[in-house]
Image (cartoon, rainbow, N blue to C red; front, side, top):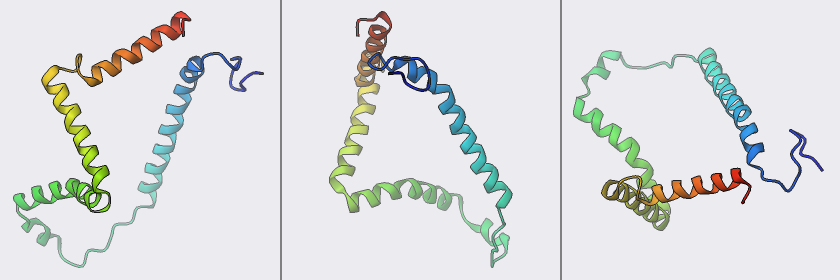
Amino acid sequence: MLIPYATYPVGDSLYPLALDLFAPTVFFFFLGASYRITRYLVTYQKPFIPYPSSELRQVSGGHRIAALINTFANSSRVGIRRKPVTTAVGLLMHLALSLDNILTGPAHGVLGLLHSSIQRVVSLSHSGEL
């Protein structure tokens, strides 16, 4: 039995198939993204603003910075209210990975270990030992 995309026998490693499908996947992703952006730009209508634009310029720089920080912090606030355990564990994992990379360097930390493990699996699959 053969996979329809190419002549890869079923049971062999799917790594060559994944490599062959990577380029079409990226192509279709950018095709879809460009379609959505084009559709947005073509159908965009400027919203009606009931107050003059000069009032918008009266907002201080500090208020703008606070609003920007609140925009990104809002997702954490909502997560803490709805799923506090999941949010706390996620934040702790981010903190642990960041501290690990800062203190030990990316080559020796958890991400470095993960990267070296992936390289080992790839080299084994290329050599036919896997």
